[in-house]
Every structure is written in C-alpha cells, then in structure tokens.
View 1: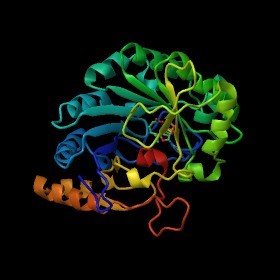
View 2: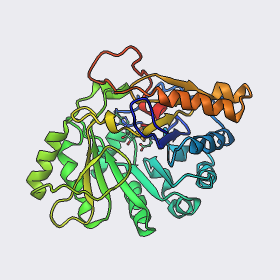
View 3: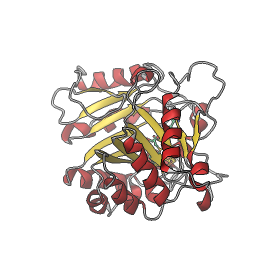
View 4: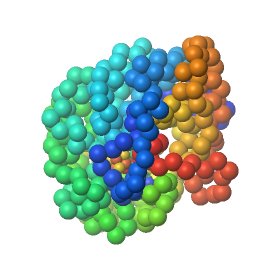
Length: 323
Ligand code: SAM
Ligand code: SF4
C-alpha cells in the first residue's frame, strides 16, 4: 500500500522473539536482560493470521527476525506456514546463524530463499568477544551450506570503533570467491549501540578501496532495501553499505515491523505504531484488523530523525525491535 509520503510499503520484518543465544555488544547487555513471557508474544497462529491480512494490504516480502528467530521453538514450522500465505513472494530470515548449523537444508525446504547472517569479523577471538560467546566457525559453515543449496546470502556486519575495524577487509574478502554480499551497517544509536563508537561508511570504504582498488558501483538489484553496492575487480559477490546516518534513505523506505509482542511498528527510531495483539486477543474481526493496519501504515513517520530531537524516540533495544 501507499503511505502518506507516497512510499510503497511492501515489506515487513516480523520479530518472533526477543530472546537470543548471543549478547552482541551493540544489541544486548551482558546480564540482567528481562525477556517477554511466552503469553506476551504472538502465537504462530496469530502471526500467520496477521501475515495473511498484511498480504491483502500489499505486503509481498517477509523477513523473520528476532532476537534470534531460531531460538524460538518451532521457528521453521512458522516459516513453512508463512511460505504458504497467498501474495507473499519472498521469505527470508535475519539470523546469527549458529542455531542453523546442521539445519540449513530444513530451513531451505521450509521455504526460506534467503538468509541475512550477522557476522562482524572472521577473527574467532574478536567474534567471541563481540557476541559474548559465539563460535565463528559455526556461522561460516552455515554460510557455505546455504550457498551450496542456492540460497541468497547476505552478511550483515556492524563496524565498531576499537573492536572489529582491523578485520573489515578480511570480512569483505568473503565476497571475492563466494556469490554473496557483505554489507556494512552503520552502528545505530539505539539501545546498547548508543554507548559505542560508530565507524562512518566513508572510513570503511576508504579501507576497502585501499585493499581492493576501485569500488565500482554494482547496479544489479540485490534486494528491497537501502543498501548501496559495489563490486571490486575480480569479485564474484559484492559489498554493500547501509548508512542510515550518513545517507538517510527514509524517502525510499518500504518497510514496517511487527514486534514479538504484536506491535505494528512503523519506523525503527519512533515508538509510533499500533497494538495488534490487544486487538487480536479482544476478538477483532479481519476487517477491524485490516483497517487498523491500513490506518497505521498510512501514518508511517516521514523520517527516522536519529540526528534530531523527536518526541516519540524509541527506547527499546534492537533485540526487541528485530533490527
Ligand atoms: N539475531 C539476529 C541477527 O543478529 O541477525 C536477528 C536480530 S538482530 C537485532 C538484527 C540486526 O540488527 C543484526 O544484523 C544486527 O547486527 C543489527 N543490530 C543490532 N543492534 C544494532 C545497532 N545498534 N546498530 C546497527 N545494527 C544493529
Ligand atoms: Fe542476538 Fe542478533 Fe542482537 Fe546479536 S544482534 S544479540 S545475535 S539479536
């Protein structure tokens, strides 16, 4: 559907849990995390019902996210149900990949055609530190298994000052021999990210250009999002940059979010949205849900406003929002 800013909204990120098997430094605190109770999060039946209605409003692409989506029991069963929703053209997952180790074929057969895998470094020690306990070799094995099955793979890396900067070139080099995209996402000042040091896209580009030579623009369409892609000479895959701070892309934003507790969230940085769980559990009809969602999406904020003072700034952490 088209919102009040004339943007076509055809993509939703559905978070199915706020829990995670890792504790990435920019996303979750190490200790003292309180999670939703099971009754607070949408059931899989509720999620599928909303997905059917959202497809009627023009949503064509669903990304399952979290927390860590694979940390919720039965995640791949949900994926299979979502893959059968009429009107949905692509179904993907954002994941740290560790719990997919040994289950990639099952995920593929359930209907996932693409994986976005969070991986900030290839260095086992730095990975362990940044994720507070993860094993990088398990993530790498999932990447190769997914590629072997013909799934589209994107790596999401968040450069953080003083942590993984030195290894960014090695990470980007994954795209030299593999047909995948390595995307560098600017650290956002949300939740735990607010106290860390972002590395601006221009600084990452400069490092990569020094290592790989000219970063030629890659115009091949690689998804529905705001990344800009380049492909250095001799690369099989490409390198992407997502720069919400240095290159705001709100004018082309095509997405909304559904949080694990059933809140239809309209913009990453704003609290604006509507409580669908309350409606679902109060017995709302499909018609009532459709008009609430239509009305909310129409009012999607024009800009994220990270750089300015906004009245309804989001206070939730990324694991609660879904990235
Ligand atoms: N657990 C899954 C994963 O890590 O891919 C899915 C959820 S995670 C919240 C989604 C994405 O948000 C990840 O790619 C992660 O790197 C990103 N993210 C989390 N906190 C961030 C921050 N402060 N700034 C930028 N990206 C962040
Ligand atoms: Fe978990 Fe993903 Fe957040 Fe890391 S970024 S703590 S893997 S939800």
